[in-house]
Amino acid sequence: MSLTFERLESTVRATHARPGPGYFALLLAAASLAAFGGWAYSLVIREGLHLTGLQRPGGWGNLITDFVFWVGIAHSGTLISAILFLFRARFRTAVYRVAEMMTVFAVMTAGLYPVFHLGRPWFAYWLFPYPNDRGLWVNFRSPLIWDVFAISTYFIVSTVFLLVGVAPDAGALRDKATGWRRRLYSALAFGWRGTDEQWRHYTRAYLFFAAFATPLVVSVHSVVSWDFAVSILPGWHSTLFPPYFVAGAILSGVAMVIVILVPLRKWLHLEEVITSTHVDMLSRLVMLTSLIVTYSYATEIAIALGAPASDPERSTFVYRMTGDYAPLFWLMVACNCVGPGLLFVGRIRRSVGAVFAICLLVNVGMWLERFNIVVTSLAHDRLPFNWRTYTPTWIEWAMTFGAFGWFFFWFLIGLKLLPPVSIAEMKEELAHDEQAAHAAAEVAHAG
Amino acid sequence: MPADPGVLGSFAEPAAAAVAIRALRADGFADVRAAMPAPFPDVVAALGKPRSPLDFVTLPGAVVGLFCGIGLTVGTSLAWPLVTGGKPIVSIPPFVIVIFELTVLVGSLTNLVAVLVGTWHGGRSRFFPAGTSFNADRIGVFATGGDASAAEQILRESGALEVSRVA
Image (cartoon, rainbow over all chains, first blue to last red; front, side, top):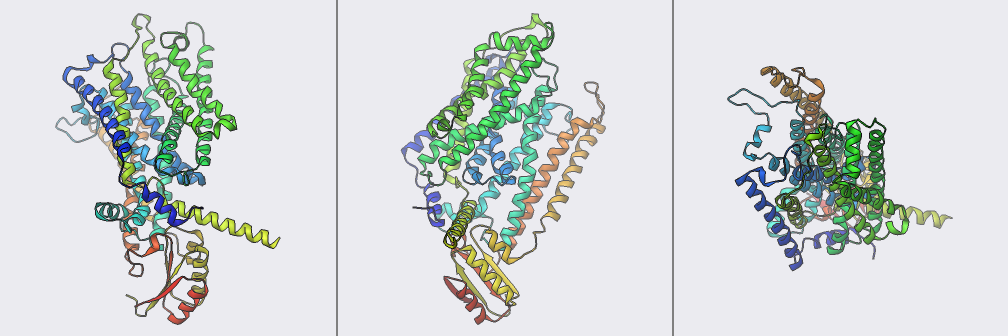
């Protein structure tokens, strides 16, 4: 049975049916994980950062790794919804809503970790410029202030983009909803009735949102990379970092979209809407960004190894590949370079299970990449007497895994409130396909 | 409220709705509108409406954001001229980052306000009441400012599933 407007709408509406025990079990697991991380963090608040493994020279560890990882995860949503929209990539239609939701919840997760890392989170508001008794303003030359502006702007713009995209769908869902859902969709629809006048403004505004979001998505992870690159630490001080970080962010983000979409399409019976072709197209993005990341790894290493033996940069990279953290480095290479390389084999790429497994490993690899950048560079700085290995404590691991609980808790709630597929854009696609089929049939008939 | 009654037709196919709209406009109907579940290019092209004036709101919004960014970074640095890291008080390269973010932020929020106003205004049409199926799987075409009987005939000939007069 081919997909019709009515069938599409009923399929999406069915995803909002009363949740079963499986849903509540997942929600409870996510909430418990987040609560465990929160409890571990409460110990840090009560007793101090000495409960973590942070010490000189390793002042940054798991918490900053988590921040960079989750900002990276947040990248794919805007890439898929905005950049692919501007490029008129039609496969984005079925998958971008899930990616956008993922973006918003991932930024919500990322933003917590620099605050956790502060040690005195109750002073986090000092990061924002506000008039105060001392007449002192924030230092705009500091990369940490750039982060505040970049991440908060990204969060606001991504949320607005998501909610504006939902408006026509909320209008469609509202017309057949009852009770609190009707009130929710009425609020999200902004009075949507689908008139040509509304579409005239909406399509223009959507284009502008995409145009704003495109440079924003590139800038955000570039800014995060400058947190490292503007320092003089070997392993961080590199002009390669912005494109390297952006490509890595897209790699991890698209991999996370696939990891979420594969079980989701089965669980919510969306196989007819989100097809294996969509997974295939996303896999190609993983392949492309994996190649860029692999090239970046090779470039960094080649530049470092090309330096004289006494060069600190060379020393850091040799340490990264052969020192205390070498197993993590090579595991990262296996997950981010070798694994996605298997996707060049058509049979593997068309196997949804294999793609899922590879993308899961990419996520592990991308977390390790951030860990390698943050930790190994600090552990092996310019002063040999300063060198010391950083090992995260169970509290930091609890907070790292708690982030996944926090993210999936909000994502599971979001799934039951917002349509996981853009109904309006899918209808446009269906009409386009039908028209193309008619035209082809007419040509065949005339022939 | 228009002085004369209009005619509302309901279509299943965007192409048929587009044919009806073109025929109505060719027949001299002053006001032809549509409501639809997606912005079907055929229908939008047939209506021939001018581009949304949102450009004239969003661009100034972004420019305001740009100047807010310049004012915030340069103004606050000059208000307490403290040298840090040996860098100039007004350090343009790092300030560009904050200025860029504020340009995007204020531009996007202005765009949001503009689309909300446009959507609210565009949804006030009495010809497409809420609860009708134009958000679901039908395309509504409304014509006024001409002979209602002629409009009914055009809509039916173009393949309308239902045709009704709107008082």
